[in-house]
Length: 358
Ligand SMILES: *Cc1c(COP(=O)(O)O)cnc(C)c1O
Image (cartoon, rainbow, N blue to C red; front, side):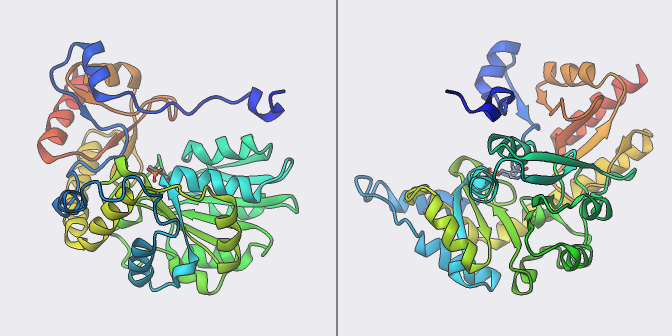
């Protein structure tokens, strides 16, 4: 018999392949600005590491502990290796945390809007969603989230910077929030886009793990590191919870190829720094463009922009016909667009200007 909670689920709609859309639309070129992928590609060191590795040990199971990558990240973040739990992308970590921590009738507090997978996995476990809308500036409302916590609350999801709004809350604000959250509630801070924050020197809350056992911090290689295809994400958690998550997860969830790619990407921090600089520059141009056009937008600190425009569906169709795919369906008349290469951003901005002025 089908689980009751599954019957009413709407599936997560993954990105169509670029080839598929090109065929459908009769396009010769398509730039995907809908999935917040890294428009600057991947560090060339990754290709070299993969070529050097070849297909060694393809017949062997991979290292379940990902020892090489684990030690590199532990050193980089100044945490103990045993506090890291790796997933087949953060997608798997979101599923793993929900599966491990949620029981039917538990409450899960979320920002509205936020990344849809938190709600999907909470619902699969039969938990109850408590959505807290962003404030009028598009900021995650920590005060209201705190107020939404009840004795039934098991988890709070904080996406920082938040997808799709792009806004972020400060280290100080999260520290104050953690001080007030009951210890029985797990607070998950999804830092998928934390590398892109330039307004605050130390935006990540990894250091707060020393103080709060109920904090979980998530990171991924899919965005700033440009490794979405390899599926590598991880959680930094208190050692007790790490042990439990290691018990629940699949034993060989990441291949050695993924580990080698991630290790090479992690070692090339200058690639990441260059990407972050380039994104910040282009993001600034995007925001001043929208401001000039008097389009409503949120102040992004990520590699994407969320803005509201009349006839958004029609605009997205026009952009698609010109070879640019953007994300729709995240709010009525709101579009989310990934910060792309300078020439692409310029073309898209010209198309938007023409659309508004027509
Ligand atoms: C892209 C994204 C992820 C998924 O990352 P993967 O590691 O590719 O699974 C997680 N959280 C947020 C908020 C994202 O936007």
